[in-house]
Amino acid sequence: MKYYLSKSEIRNRIRELRRKQDSSTIIQKSRAIWKSLLSLPEYRRATNIAFYASIEKEGEVATLKMIEDSLTQNKKVCLPKVVADRLEFFNVKSVKELKEGAFGILEPIGDKIKPEQIDMVVLPGIAFDATGNRIGFGRGYYDRFLKKVRNVSRIALAFDFQIVDKIPSTESDVRIHKIITESRIIDCSKG
Image 1 (spheres, rainbow, N blue to C red):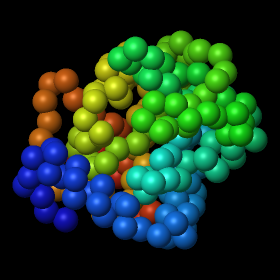
Image 2: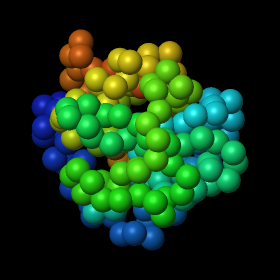
Image 3: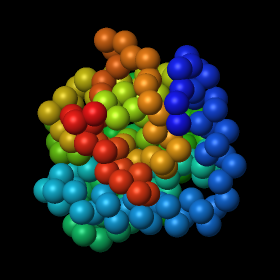
């Protein structure tokens, strides 16, 4: 898909496409994405993984099953919570303990984890390009957080239609390392 639009125009178009998917399609595509994530050496090596709780009404890649499966594989999982104007991550023992928080997102209630304890960050986004640029919801929470954990694997989960030719970026944007879609794994260092 070729886009030569502003970030807000790309954000609006992709969000609309995501919301139009039915839940069975999202689940099917998410299973394929999960299978690819499991195959990554970065995932297999990681002990402490920062995930995100998917927002169903936004049509995001479904992550709750991924979180539960990771916990059964003896991975430590943490999820973000907005505290003041930043993301902080907290340990999770089960998705059943999550509570709705800021912006209607499920949030953890466990113990806070230090950024340097995280081995891998699995992050959401609305649109991505092959060089690792991403568009989120526009609040900059993840960019600010990722600057604190520069030496960890940054893996984004997305559907194929969320990959666009070019995303305008600035110096404050932090690139991701890999994008996993239902049909491929994009190594952004080769983009």
